[in-house]
Image (cartoon, rainbow over all chains, first blue to last red; front, side):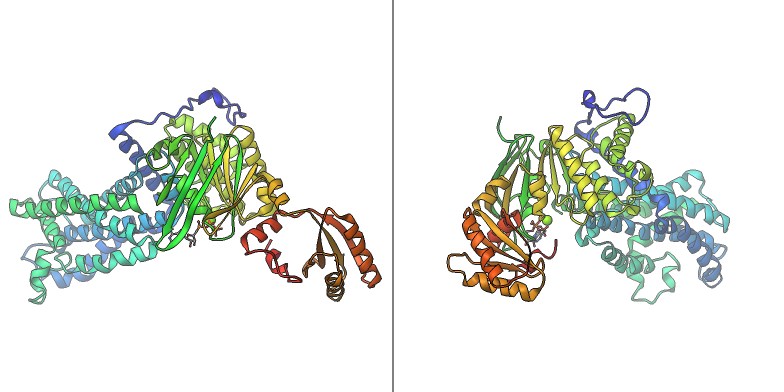
Length: 279
Length: 327
Ligand SMILES: Nc1ncnc2c1ncn2[C@@H]1O[C@H](COP(=O)(O)OP(=O)(O)OP(=O)(O)O)[C@@H](O)[C@H]1O
Ligand SMILES: [Mg+2]
């Protein structure tokens, strides 16, 4: 192929190697995934609404909830626990759960434009677009988590469990967001229209994240709501994060969260891959 | 050498809509095939099956010797697709789009940058290289899309209505590029609703309607099938036009005249009999029709197209202007 470059060279200097050599087997999936992830990440700074949800919204939430509701809610917390210590782990899960909605919107956006046809007419791995989306969204969620924790520290949150536990907080929250992204990928692949995808995501993400211990202790809710809130995976993740924040973690807190993350992924990831092949 | 595209009895239905209903044709390497048909004829559906984006419900298709279903990846390595709607990432810049595809095809980073710049230059997009495609005009977007489909130097290029929505000068430049590519040995399958475009670019034309091939041949062959020449008389106003048509309708040996209200013309099939033409002119002159212009005309591809896709010939004296007004 490199010998065919008879057209005038637009740049000076030697002509680089223009041969096309794709890696084979599983390496191909990593290769394609890296390129499609790059595609999604490189536009992040140019997409104001995504930047807002990534960087501004978390800051606003931390500051607003901490100062507006803090005084009212602190009373229902165990004595000596500052609201920031309760709020930050909770709001971290909530923001990550909301952030996963971008996966469905992004995929629907791709499907509603011609770009998916481009990828499918190329000799690349079938699920490259899906992999690129999930990887890029996971990177973005990690960024969100880090921003939140920094702002959290500024309003009084402390890593009482040490730095390693802090790192585990990020890993847990992002893993849960990653699992949620697979559910939202299915929605995006099904509705194929960005606006509908947005609505179809928030309509259940909203109650899911609010009927939980994210902002207020479950004990302050009406009796009939308490069992729902208590078993909500968002509550389970929030509680694990709170445990990590203060350095008290029991196995009973870890297993349910792990089960949810693995369970969601095992069910929804293959479903999304299958669905992407048929859209 | 076997044909580079072989399509045999291809079928595709959406529910009970038989979008493609037994299409067969072949394309020789290095030639241009024009796939012509009205809206909804099944052109895009056919191209999408050949480009491995849709799987056929029946029949077979081979591109460069590879079956589009069983060897779809091999097919994808040899084709380029410029769809009816631009398949570029709007948020990426023109250069990034090209670079990404070059990387996906397996070029090194340097190689991909070089190839991207080469194509930007060729398609006169260098100035817009670093702007997101969302800021491009329709014509630039088309060029960017075509550039992206050429990154891997495809042997077979599918162009689905490449000039729809382009202004005349962009259309001409796209035709020029297509000819260059053919000159370099690329085989092109072009779909279009513009007969002029097929006439201009295609070596062979396949006319489809309702998912089936209804005619096939070079544009000369198709025109010849339509029969001989017509006398076309242009007059100054509509009253004159009606008078002229009336006179010619009453002419004994003449065929049925057709009037075109928009162009102020009446045309009369005369085959190769110039005597009839001369007589028709004298009838009009005697009837005191004020003739603005007259000439003998070969049937255009438009005539071929209309007679093939509508059921039979136009009724006598009918108004053909509606059929031609949107071009
Ligand atoms: N994805 C789809 N689902 C359902 N029907 C479809 C789909 N794609 C095409 N069709 C139908 O198949 C038929 C052929 O469509 P196709 O797009 O191939 O026509 P076309 O010749 O490209 O027309 P145009 O000139 O308007 O682009 C139409 O009746 C169309 O409505
Ligand atoms: Mg079409």
